[in-house]
Image (cartoon, rainbow, N blue to C red; front, top):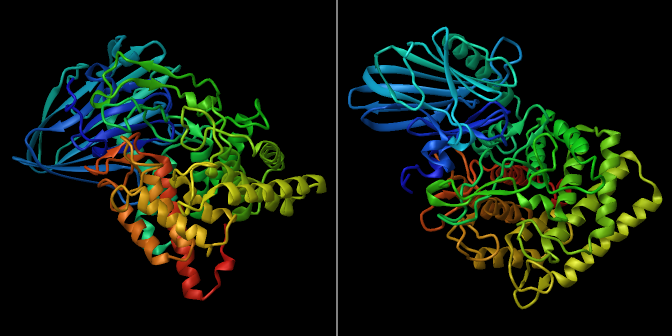
Length: 604
């Protein structure tokens, strides 16, 4: 496969069932889907594994125009094609809850309706096991195609009874008003469940209604941002593994941050940092079930190492995330190796404790409730911070070099200790613990102010004693180490905007390199401006950054500053969570403006 056979990353849309997800191109090809869960091997892996790794395409001939969208308040994807002979609409989705009826464990539904004229196309069903290295055993039952591999069964049925053969495109033709329904059922360690295409489409309709109800209950964080925020929250909910409550960072592995390079990582796991940001996003929108499930999952996932935290876990709380490199696979547009697992799981990152405790504080603040057992666990994390905040760590960017005293890590340690003290005020805390946490929090603040700011640069820097800048320190305005009107914060924001500029509104993480601009940094920039009183500037950055999403409102992790092409794993929960938090800051600031309330009332 050549480097040009795959569309740009932003060409894909996301569908899912909160257990796994699929990426669908604008041309109708599912080029990525793992089963039975996000971090399982792919059944369709063409995105990084090449043609032999499988695809599932419903495509039309002679397409002249294309338009796509998500149905309002839903995650059902609608793609409209205009061809030389007619027009057709494709609905793509997955059934979210298959437990209430006799349905497969996962069910992909694709319904193509000719809305005018006549259209011709093909159905290409080519599942792959072990990245295409092992064959499926093919069978037919009651007119349905059944593909078996070890303990996994795939069943494909069509409303037209098409004679589908795996790996061979099957042509079809539709006239005005005709619909082709394609239903793919997937079962693992269970008997294959056969489903009629029409029943599958009805089940998708029920799922669509559920999503609309969920989205309809979300509260507005800032009216002018509602569309972008709602799409981000729907995406974050899709990326939350329902059986455990664990949010994954992205549904993909090895989509490159650098074109053709080796910065290709596996993000199909739950990072404490990313997950905590997702918790904050849900809480701000008034959706409490997801944060509650995450805190319960985290309580059990971290039990083996308690009170210490791993940087990331698999969706069931497992810790074996050994990184393996597959140089035999072609990678996305030649970017190799394809990686499975992530070695960052072995790093020490001080900030994850701060993120975790902040998630617990946010839940208590918004709901008035926190499990006592969860509070005991969070108190243990605060003890770790009090003991280890002076230790160097690997930092938020997971640099695979030596540990350093990262300013962002120290700021998050301050946040963790501060939020633990706040929880203690609500739920009770022994005096000796309170004194220890207070002393440590004050010592962290003193160290950051003394060692983290470079007078010559006029900015807080990446690490103690270094002149290098880091966009992660844009988190300082929400920490409380400096007051919002601090000249140091203002000069830090301006220095980062100037020296890490990747073309407005984009920012590099820590200096111009071969990698792209890091999209969450732009939303952090917006929030930092708003939190320090520069609301109009912050709104401008927010709106400009939202304008960089793909046509479905989805963001990857990074963006090429020159081409404005999205890069890295897709869609990226980190970016969408940062969007929601920046929008919430705008909403608070506008409310303050309207009410005339002083900035001192700002909630953190």
